[in-house]
Length: 431
Image (cartoon, rainbow, N blue to C red; front, side, top):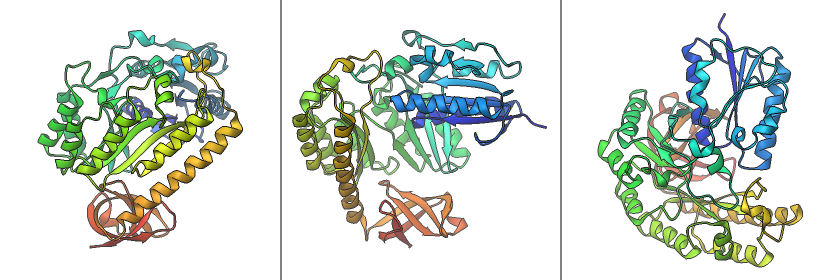
């Protein structure tokens, strides 16, 4: 009988891609993948540390694994191992801890792993992280997340990611193109480029993100390419124009704003102003009028006075965007932001979140309404609900259609006809 392994992955798409790579180590050894809620021989918890709540969720997942099978081998990896190693050492039942950049080492212990009184620990200090751990993961057999970059050199005042992931480093363009070719041969129709700071691609190989995109366009074998989150200061006009002129790169942008106020952006140590950010949004709409534009926003950071929040809110109202991905500020150890004042109470944070959520809903509804009646190309996935299947347009609108198995993993032309059962999905008519 095959041994079993279960995964619990927290945090970003990058973590999910890396968990897929780790699972490949077990698959090569004949392991069967089972749900995390099941009893397994090995549990792998790939942790996140972006907020205090992420730390808590990581610890809870570890405790669930230990409780589920006291004889199982429990492996913990991911960003929390870099920033909370002393906390993890106190959890009785963890057998192995691998740092965020040491995941490749997991395959070396699978055959001889044993229960340990204290965890075996392999972690690399963030300043010494030089190697690149490649990873790729599939979402519903149609979309593949390809990790092309890791680490960050920005050291924003609220963030611990550079301490968890190390400095910026990346694959080579040659290796990215080879990986795309491999995924296309498996039947993948869409690839999403992901990393910690993908606009910084090329630092460790003397290349550039713009040149990577040009190379993928010239390769011309993947039907759809999406880019993950990209910093506004790295989203050049040349990149925007390349996307506008390409039939391969989807008109879909995710751009971190974090605050719509220059005073707060400065103490955040962000590398742009609201004027530059608005210029990027305006440039996108100049060349790609129907583009989806999502932004990131931190609400209630230390130092965000009522006046700063009001200016930020009013600035965001002026932006022609499609979606706001927001989260409440969470204090992180060893970051300069810990000392900023005023400290924002949970009640005020919640009030501000409600305002941002309402603004997000208004922006998203307006964007969707603007697209009703238009013809779009949709890549349909295998997920089903209420006799419908779903997929995404080129500009990232979730679309429903009556179930037809032959549509799965196919790009189909449709007309968007109106809202479906929820407010973030549109009905379609097959053309």
